[in-house]
Length: 246
Ligand SMILES: Nc1ncnc2c1ncn2[C@@H]1O[C@H](COP(=O)(O)OP(=O)(O)OP(=O)(O)O)[C@@H](O)[C@H]1O
Image 1 (spheres, rainbow, N blue to C red):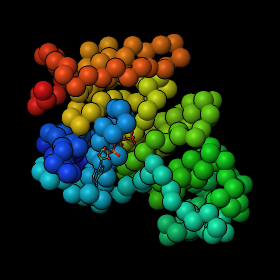
Image 2: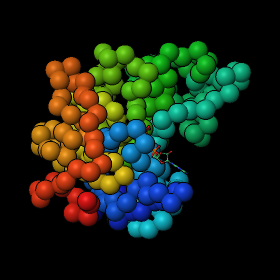
Image 3: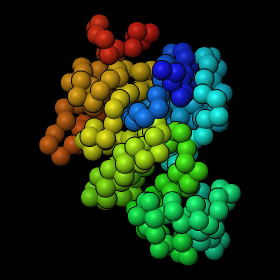
């Protein structure tokens, strides 16, 4: 099956430093792929390259024909002094009121349309952002830290909702997450990125991969992991290991 989106041997450099080097990634329809990695690992940069918002210095990106992408960015910069309602914010996508109402209902905030964006709670804002990403029924949903600012119960609900949306829209989901525990249950493929791909695979195999443990430490019952990454680590051979690295 042709992937919806793929990147081949991507290099992205700034100020003489490689932010991404030798990165290969593929996303298939119906797949949930989660990118994890420490702060500054290049996750958002990779997503922006995949979306075509940034050009790589080397490598190429292939998108399937007529690919529709719904993107939920990590930060939304809105002028807080502007009286922008949720409905008007979503209308900026060019969508009709019926589609906007349907998207809001689907993310479980059906009655929020007349509220001001600046007055939303963290959880409501994330749901409105998700509504914006799904309103045009995309083939690929790209979510940059979709549960930030949401309490722990709300986080697992949101991840569940993302899993349901994947099935309903028959789309692929590419997600960046810092949460390892909750995300494991709602993902098919985990890719650990730290400027290069350290390891990738199914959540169960990844969670015991030495490269994953080196990046994130042993998982505790609460899902809190300790970052213990050392740049001088050795990768021994293994099928989940990226062949170009170290
Ligand atoms: N255009 C740019 N010019 C210079 N440096 C950049 C540019 N874009 C990103 N960087 C740097 O590249 C590194 C990776 O940034 P990026 O935002 O992709 O990381 P991230 O993994 O998404 O981090 P976080 O988890 O903190 O969101 C950072 O050190 C950032 O400062």
